[in-house]
Length: 242
Image 1 (cartoon, one colour):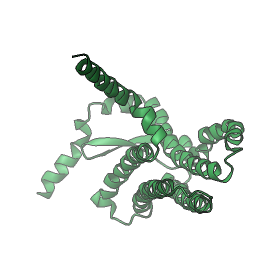
Image 2 (tube, helix red, strand yellow):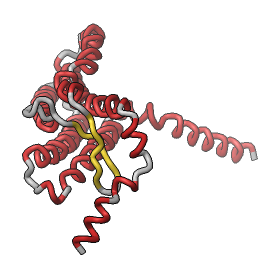
Image 3 (cartoon, rainbow, N blue to C red):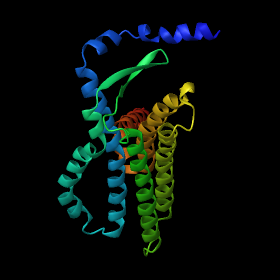
């Protein structure tokens, strides 16, 4: 049984059609993998900016719009360029395909041994969770001290922040397992948990934002609701005419 398993694992490389293309054209992993990790680093930074944006909206409601209008160019530069502080070792390191589960992913042979991307991402996501918790606490505290308490807004804000933080916490947990090798590398379980946690974070965060924001729901589903309401109006008009 073990020999059969080893033969199956040894044949994983041939199962992927794009293997020869990836091997012959090294420009693809050299561009794709740094870009992928750049987007992974930009996501927590965007989350931090969104949390601070929400807090400043409550603390400074009158100057909020003008303040963020002036800060927006700096925020864009922060999202675009700050990830290079974390992916510099990936850029200078050689990239190679790693074959697993009948397919492959792009890995890299670290030039600087201590500068692991997983450790950087774990630190970045932990900072994101802390900032999200602090900003949410300040926002809710400010809302409770307003003359007219927005109970529904407080509840929605708390639930949305909790769910987004849970998504980041799950990804941070998966990355900690990968970084500190809590699970034996022979099981390959960490290579399964890490992409799944990324997918949950990438899909879960937009869903939470759509569910929490009525304006965003109106923007996303407005055309659908409008078409349904128009059809109802036409039906009523026909009945009235008869």
